[in-house]
Each structure stands twice: as structure tokens, then as C-alpha cells.
Image 1 (tube, helix red, strand yellow):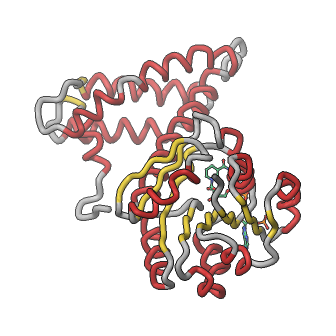
Image 2 (cartoon, rainbow, N blue to C red):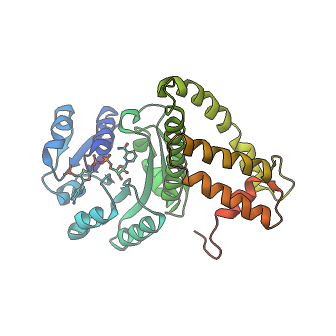
Length: 292
Ligand code: NDP
């Protein structure tokens, strides 16, 4: 049977979440600063709350999907009493520290708290492609899991409330570099009058897909202290980095990334390094003395 759920924040993502809850048969109460964003949901069967307080009071479980944590605190702060004995799930994008701080505040108000990271776009919510990450006290995840499954796969990461944000932002970081790589590659390739982005991308997709399949082997090298399974000569990589920088410059494309990569490899060679390893590459990114 359906559960009572509240959704606060009806932007593109919040509307997709609320719509999935209605479709899954949950009694869904919604609130948004711009009230008209609830119109379509109300037509589907959701209930419009007149205030944040009314929204919180309507359900034992409230999901928040707003622009950030600051707005969340601004909206919930004045009506925190209404959270007592209820569970708050923050799905807005934020850092692990923001998640831990909001949990401390919410539990201080007598509320249960979970933090979440949505790994989907609005159009894939409630499809098998979507997954949402959760962290915090496991009992809250277990209790509300059937509700969470309306969005796609629900993955529980652990009791440290910061974990969902950590994974979320690390996954987004990987995606950002992937897209940045795509934009750079397309800029270089389409500097030639005979090359279109679409034509070039027919090569890029299988190439990147093959490379993505190498990642688990690299990850195993990062995790293990033993002999790395994958190595490559730093000198070989340096030659390629210089060529990528030069080809970009010749094509009229900015080359800072590859200039920096080449400088990094030169430094490693100067320090007596010989082989590139995945664990060495990850280590080189770490700032000494800081850990999450
Ligand atoms: P939108 O810009 O569509 O929605 C932003 C929401 O925040 C709206 O409900 C907006 O209210 C509200 N808001 C902003 N400022 C204020 C304020 N000062 N007071 C009250 N409410 C405010 O963003 P999305 O729905 O796309 O994103 C929401 C969250 O979901 C973000 O954290 C985002 O990172 C995350 N997310 C989004 C994805 C996506 O593909 N869209 C993917 C994964 C996560 P109003 O309508 O009144 O402006």
C-alpha cells in the first residue's frame, strides 16, 4: 500500500520525484516557493500544502530537493518543530560536510535524517537507469526503502551521513572530466573542415567505452599494495602529452590541460620516476595531510 510522503522543492528534479511517488501510489504532499509548479502534480493526484510547516506535518517522511543546503536551512529553520518524530531526507546537491551538519541540526530537532544523491536526470527518474544513493542511520533507510524504490534503484552506502554526497560529487567529477574531454576532442577534430562533431563522435563513443572497461583493473591497482597489473613508460606518455598539446595549439584550441600534464610527467621523470601507475596517478593528486 501507499505511504504518506512530502516533497519540498518542485524544480525539474523535485517534480520528477513527486510524480514518481504519485504514480507509485503514495499519498504525496508537495510544496514549492513558486506554487504554480505544483499544478500538474495536483492534477495527477498530489496534495498542495499551503506552507512548509503544513507540508512537513502532512507526512512522516519528507524529501527535500532544492537548489542547495542553505535554502533548505532557510526554509526549514523557522518551522523546525514540525520535524520532531519525522524523517527528513535531503536530496539536494551538497558536500559531505554540509550533509553531516544538516544531520546534526535535524537530529537536534528530534528528527531522523538521511542524505541522498540522485544519480539520474529528471527524464530517467523511475526507470531502471536511475539510482539514488543514501547514507545515514540504516534504520531510516530500511524503514523507507519501499518509497525510495519509486525513483529507481535505492543504494545504501553506510552510516556516515557524508557518504552519499562524497560518492555523488566524485561521480559528478568523473562525468565532468568525461564531458570536458569530449568538448576538447571535438574542438580539435572539428578544426578540420572535413570533420563534423557527429562523424567524429562515432569514433569517440566506442573508444571511450573501451577505455571505461579498463577502469576496474586500474582501480584494483589503486587498492592493492602489490605489483601493478598496468604500467606504461612515463617517457611514452610525455611524448603523447606534448603531441596532444601541440596538435591542440595547431588547431587553435587551448592546450593548458596537456601543457600541465606534460609538466607533471617531466617532473616525475626528473624525480627518477620511470613508469606510470594508476596508484601513482591517484597519489599525485593528494594534498598531504588532508583526508575526508
Ligand atoms: P531547479 O532549478 O529546477 O529547481 C530549484 C529548486 O530550488 C526550485 O524548487 C526552486 O524554487 C528552489 N529554490 C531556489 N532558490 C530558492 C529560495 N531562495 N527559496 C526557496 N526555494 C528556492 O533545479 P533541479 O530541480 O534541477 O535541482 C534540484 C536539486 O536536484 C539540485 O541540488 C540538483 O543538483 C539536484 N539534481 C538535479 C539533477 C537534474 O538533472 N536536474 C540531477 C541530479 C540532481 P522555485 O521553483 O520557486 O524557483
